[in-house]
Length: 261
Ligand SMILES: O=C1O[C@H](COP(=O)(O)O)[C@@H](O)[C@H](O)[C@H]1O
Image 1: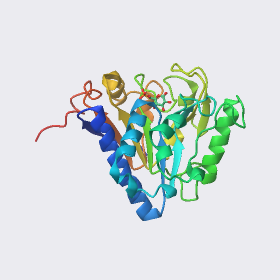
Image 2 (image 1 turned 120 degrees about the vertical axis):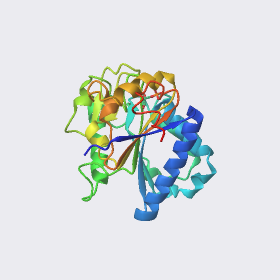
Image 3 (image 1 turned 45 degrees about the horizontal axis):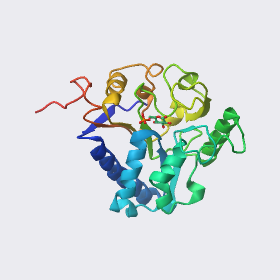
Image 4 (image 1 turned 180 degrees about the vertical axis):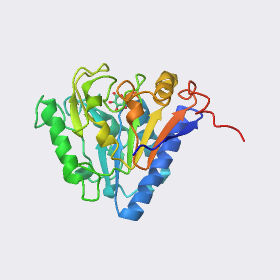
């Protein structure tokens, strides 16, 4: 089922990060109150790391029971463990090293010097198996029903490591695949596919800055998901675009600003 995108536009990227962090705290606390645990899929990139830094600085972060939170990743740059360009390394610096997570619930994607060596397909298959093992009978396929899955939107409309026209964005069966020849470095990556992304209850797309304005306008104006992967990212209950005014500046007037009464 496709959920129509809802848009929230903030004044600037700092406020967007703070508001998104507050929203995430509430969502995690609600899930933990109702089901005892929560699961979140993190994104890399500037906006994703900005949100994590804002969360680290928010006093309300202590409302989260960090020991009952599963963290997954939407994509990873296939580099050695600890490489500063890995999304998990950046997430650790921005937030994860500062909060009492259960290490068994931090599901980093494999590194290129891990058990699968440089075999990115084997690494992707291992992550798919880890997701499948975490999925229960109540879930909609071989991935857990993530509470929130976050995606930074790239200037070319890529989300996770699903780049326009590359084979990964066409994948309809597998939940995790290796990516070769990504136009943004590094060229070799691991990514969730659109079917895995769509298993999430809520998908949040983050776009701040002028360089995201064209991508947001294209993805929200009816583009196809092969040409504009962000257009194919939606959640089962909710699809939320969190933007700043610069990223919203090229949206069609029918989408933003909202009509005044
Ligand atoms: O390389 C990546 O880029 C995107 C977007 O990053 P941004 O810096 O342009 O916001 C990110 O969503 C993805 O996780 C990451 O691997």
